Image (cartoon, rainbow, N blue to C red; front, side, top):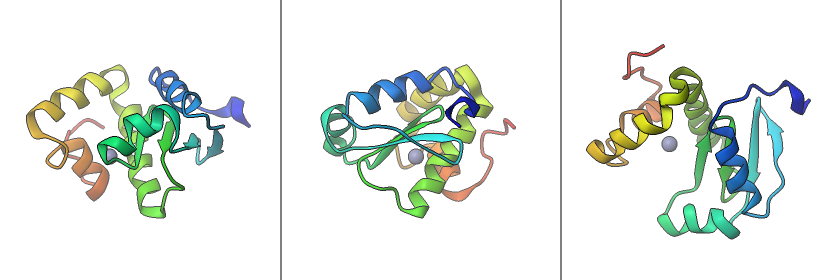
Length: 119
Ligand SMILES: [Zn+2]
């Protein structure tokens, strides 16, 4: 089953984060899910007040994701698929201009609106 996963260049970042959080991945909805609040995840997520982060098709969450959080992260997965190599630079540039709460990709992940016009 694992061989059927679509790959994204950012997946490796997520796997490194997951493995350095001492978690083993599970395969769910075409994605890899690491659940851990230890190691690197604790530093990257918990200390900054975030519950989960997505890199490509890899989702790292500090706790078992609620259905709403899972849907939110899956929308980020779709954004990675749509933006490809541009996702991380675009995300970081928008973060600088809009902050987290006004971030267009975060708002889209919440509201399911296409605000980037890229589809
Ligand atoms: Zn988000």
